[in-house]
Image (cartoon, rainbow, N blue to C red; front, side, top):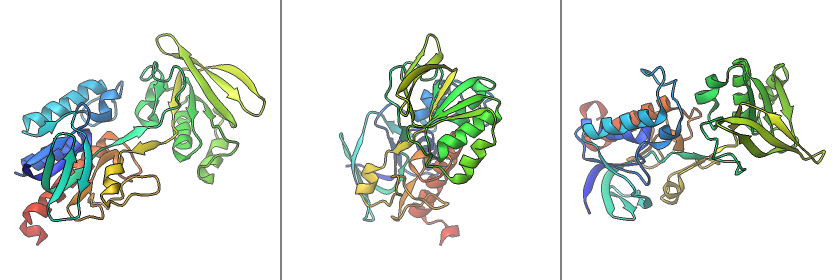
Amino acid sequence: MEAYDIVVIGAGAAGLASGIYGVRSGLKTVVLEEKLAGGTTAVAPWVENYLGFESIDGVELAAKMVAHAKSAGVKINEFEKVSKMELKGDKKLVHTEKAVYETTTVVIASGADYRHLGVPGENEFRGKGVSYCGLCDGPFFKNKRVVVVGGGNTALITALYLAHLGSDVKIVHRRDIFRAEDALVQDLKSMKNIEVLLSSEIKEINGDKSVKNVVLFDKRRGETREIPVDGVFVQIGEDPNSRQAKEAGVVVDQDGFIIVDGLQHTNINGVYAAGDVTNHPVKQLAIAVGQGVTAAVEAYAFVRRPYYRK
């Protein structure tokens, strides 16, 4: 069992940023990733909202981040899934399918997974008209026809954002009433280019090289029809990858996101969280990087107890 100063869980943007700052601070650092390093950045068709890059392919940006971390000396163990954490003691243990790591601090940057509709065409047209992030991909659909699926705050905010870009928006919700804040519902009514379709479900997404239409089922009328669209924004929530953290005693909110303060502290001393797994309301690449940096700086302060923290 090898001992570390920081064990980072997750090699997305937040985890890689933590790894870089851990190594640069002189701390023995390892990043554990159950898949390939790069995180959800690698599945973005294009990124146009990250400082320094006017436009870059998500795969390319993720590769640059991974290369940067490796060149800085960060040890990244890919395809090593965390199975259990013991976090309450001064020396914390992180168990994987391959090894057990002893560490003084842990940064949980395990991310979250978008919830999917599970309908035909959804996976086929991901990145070709199907999106899970309005803020990321909305500008590609200016003055085009889009469908937003969902009935919570995120769905309505996305619909309003797209409408302000000039898109022709239809918001589809399977229930007969929204569960979003009333202020957002009222804002919808003020927008002439938003049509609300309640008690309705997307049954299929069709196209050729990109999305061309969706098959919509109206539950009240029992009718099915095709709607021509250029884009489908699935906004039905995210599932944070926080199960092991919760089992180890880390406090999460009602949706499973890890609760952190402004310096990425969790409720356990020496345990930090960063990126989409946290309860920060803005899930963006720049936020994840900043949180990852902050978590590593705080971990350094915990390990080395610098004069300014005494």
